[in-house]
Amino acid sequence: KMNLFEGEVMGTQGERVLVDIAGLGSVPLLSVAGGEARGSVGMAVRPEKVRLDDQPPAEGFVGLKGQVGEVAYYGDVSHVYVTDDQGRSISANFQNSQRRTEQAIRSGEEVWCSWRPEDAVLLVE
Image (cartoon, rainbow, N blue to C red; front, side):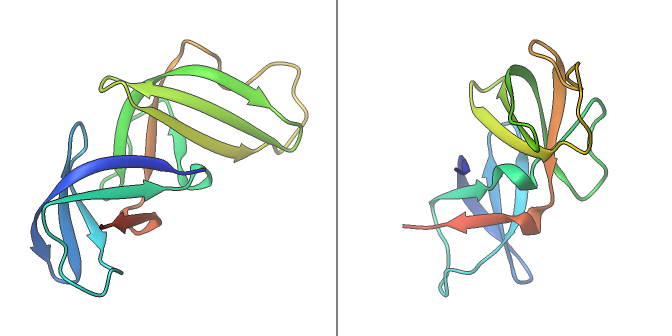
């Protein structure tokens, strides 16, 4: 599973490609495509790289606010599905460090999803 976002290349910043993504702004992504990225591109982030918090992310992180839709508890890991104001579904996985009778994150709560730009992959055609 991957979280996928569509964006437009706005330019470069050193070794990074600046991608404008609705609701996220300009995201600096490493170019692994081996060529110059232009036009429409994508960004992919694995669910285990997404952090969930009740506060905005620290500087240097990519972040968006959304509402928790579903929380699936699987013993050692939980899968959380969040919908942002753009209607995108973002999934996050996290390890459960202890057995809980009550979930730490509940359906209906507002949370911040965040990740480091280097944890995202630039997708080109």
